[in-house]
Length: 274
Image: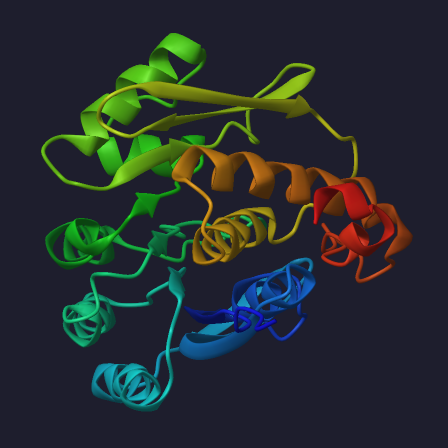
């Protein structure tokens, strides 16, 4: 009896030397969910849990060449894009992926680090809007990123989250997931708008200082579940359950003096989520 091959997933994102976010977090998430991870670094950061000290950007052409080499040889089941670094890199990524639109593409528009460092200027936003949004299956901003992308106030309730999701989608094909993790209240509520309906996902808000890389983990988990055949709402629901487990286990880690990483492998202690 033949088994389906393990999905090959590609992360295109910034590198976090502390291992909590970016391509390092994506690779851990892919592995935790039974997928084979590959990575193209679109930015190199000098950072720790307390902040980002410096950012080094590789040549845009080289980022694109890495992506093209992977697709020339490897069957890629899904792509996750995080920090893109510059308008030129965003355009190079889009050009390299333009001929591979049949596979799921999850775009997490990383604009601000957990520490508050600015990771995406107006030029990056314009380039993503012009070249990447139309290629994405789903785009996953948090409340502050959604407000910045829409040039609107930060959503403060469910009605405003639905309104900004509808506004951001416009006439683009991508679904939008507005993440409420930076909101307030006893639950963390996210809304998915696929152009036809709103789907709400709620989970108890977990109290921990170790929240570094939550957005990276959620978007890469969505990629993994899409690659394994889940529908978009199901993939988001499963990814949110995965993230909740990773947050619940985060205090077992002692990494740095600032907001530490989540426990990407907490899932292995809760087989019901796999």
